[in-house]
Image (tube, rainbow, N blue to C red; front, side, top):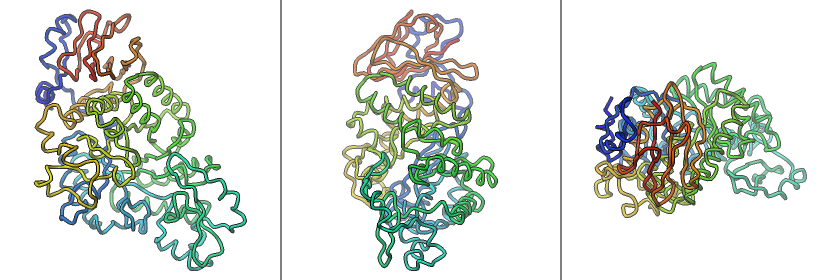
Length: 533
């Protein structure tokens, strides 16, 4: 393993660990000399960092303008070096849309992305580097062009008719009138007419995505077969389950919970260590019961809370909120993974949400990698890519090199937000010690080396300074006090009581941070981590 003095000093970030017999004053005197060494890598998947990729925008190997699997395979060394331990792929199945959430063949690879052989090679190459592969599995609905639905539309007596949800128009008049939206969909027309049919079909998201009928045992078995295929025949390590709360209508949450328990049991028969992470975009109270069936759930509440805290420069109840969520989860099961993230492919990018302020974006990342949970990074977040809705512009091409030199840059869309004038390409950022890329890489390295940051408990520390987020993390004998200054001004934290025992300056994001006597000085938008001997 690289020494911290080599890895972090080279990028302008300091990690310090005082010798056991040093006083706090001597720690401060030597604060500019990084002397700590990283321990062995303790952060193992699934308690590690995962990287989300929209294949279409990531790396284009054949210069057709569309990112592809071979391009992605060629960048596995980059991902390994970044320090992530798993890759989540947005849908890769055949589909008529650019986003590919309207699947037409659950057993295939979209031809724009490559072949099944290409994908199996990608999985093998990822595994050879110790990287896991999670694929998006879209089972709430199919695409309108899926052969099942086409058969169902054309023939009311088709064996696939009951694969979908149909109703006479008179019986659903009151449902049509409701026109309700949810956090994950602004669609208000959920029943749709089918040419040549007297009945309407149900499509929660839109008419191009007809919902499957999970009251039909044959549908359930089809989904089991699909899952088995990708785990057994292709070798993926798990699934990100799209729209997990919409398998059954919203007034049947218990049926949703039961379905995912059934699905998990079937997948574990094939692969005992399969990993299932669900998209349940709702309040903690409604999210938590899904942990009986899914190993992990995305923590949307904390995504919003981190963004708001950094945007407003106010710690408020950030730590209390996170602890309350985790405590609530623990009442459902003591075996869960808290999938934390800043933003994903359905939200304005974190850099845009923070008004393109790189210092605030770095602070958001510092919170992500020091709070409990297993962090997810949305591709391009680590280079400060921007993006606002509509969704296409949250999913713009990754910038590997300046445009004239970038043979891998996708061009399927003309970017509006992440251009060469607004975002420095990765190759440029690698040479800049203060870049967003190096900030992410160093925080990931720090987290990967720390038992407390990977597995540790969470306990709020009280600072009486509204702009400071302060909390303790402890695991496997490592006891840390983490301090974040969310403001654009330097702040001081007065240590008292048990906090005085944190006498080692373990990590600082800024060289002029210090600990003198009982005072910790934090420059603007900085992080300081103290360690107890």
